[in-house]
Length: 376
Figure (cartoon, rainbow, N blue to C red):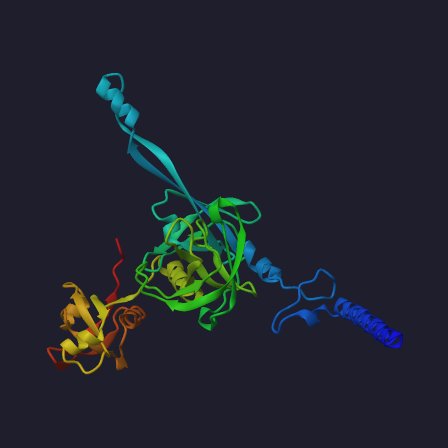
């Protein structure tokens, strides 16, 4: 019996020594190779030299100097209640008093000679616009032009050799890509938040005429409007514009205007002071299966015109409300947004061929595109 106990004790000691030795070896191995603990596709976080870290500092340092704070001042008139009461009591006079109304937002330097892109709603109806750079310099900004249809505006400040942000390609974004939102939330100053691309091509939100939003869960708060959405290389991929919120706080769903659209609109604002788009003067809607069946159309290829402007090129060409448009210049049209974007991308003066259906019969007409009128 004693012999058996001695054998078990010997085995227990051997096992304990093996465990201690194994733990010691594991500790030494992890100390020198901490990357062995990382998950596939991740970098290991460590403060020790020579070990890669999970950090977006390089991308941020390449882009954050180009993000600016935008401050606006609007003077609004109101009837002063105290003066009105004084007039009624005979000891005062009524009149309109003026008070300043201030707001804040963000902007992005896109050219070193002072051009800054922001949201139209950030500077709309402003009497004075100021821009503050990361280095603390502040300048009055001149409004170069606005595009209400996309909620973009272009400013310029009288400074040279500014840190312009590198422009990326929004058409190359993929769901799951890491992005960083940079802006001036709540007036705190330059702030960076991180998230991923949740979706691309978001439209029909009813915010603006032309919608092709990038959706992200990077935190976008009040004051972030007009700021930068950048990839991990610090390249601009979008202009932060809106958030979805069911209550007082955002729901983690933000929307950014893709940089490909920003690039084109900004260039037009620089060259023309406005964005020039094609216009047909029609209002289309998607064709549902039920509506197609009611009209005796075999499938839902096509869009239905629910309104045709009486002074527009579409009306002059012969289009009428209720017409079904199936093709434009031979390209099949299945979604109203496709038709809107296709026509908007044409130069005024272009002639297009339209195929459609009216009262169950096919038709084909030509229409000459005009410039889209500016919204009031």
